[in-house]
Length: 330
Image (cartoon, rainbow, N blue to C red):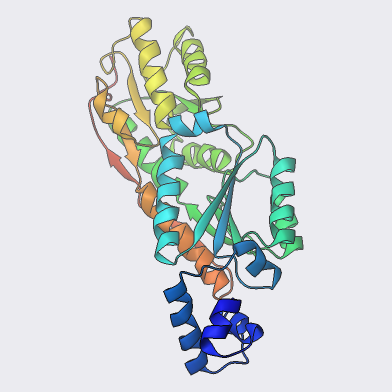
């Protein structure tokens, strides 16, 4: 900055004001300083800029997952890809942190806020009684919840229309003659798991639906599927809350010599390329997850631009019928 000041013929303070967008310098001087900074290849140190109260140009995302879990979870990878596309368009970075529990996640937000590491954060995996929400409101850190339902006072929210998705699943299976249906769900403590449970119950008043909780992993889904298929009155269809669990369920059915879809129909509430590559290819409820991530980032930018938080419903799920579903066996 001293080199820029000498070249332009102004004080170092004036250079700082010009580069950080602060008032007190003319537009002509600001432009001249930026030109010289570009010529010299100057880039502001983010930590130093943050100490002076300027924007960090970074959004934060904390995941309660290990990196290996993220590699197997297509939904989250596509979501992050959408975030990155929108952040990149605004020259923003993404601070990504992995933690083990909610307490550690809240501690990360407090540290980021105190050190001005991020301008705002994106929350996923909302719990039914989530301690992160009041913590972020107390901090005053701009935040968008991806997947919350209804209004969240003080926070922006991009929710999914689980009732519409459940209606498509229930209507399709009922039309095929299925009456006994099992569902392998995500963790019951998650808000969107509870929302799907309520939505499916409302949409299947004429059907028998038994929900078995799992944790989105293939191992848990395989155990749940074995229990379901070993029951005396096994269902004719199983709905899985994500693609990975549905793939595991398909493998268990093959191990138990249960033919899909002749003996059992399988449907996944999320899609991925693997759902099309297996045999039989899986019927899915498909959403554009990359677009979902992009829209989440746009809601965050609305907050950072000074607009009030909004709750937006995202409902683009489409039922894609493939080979893993058929009429219920007689």
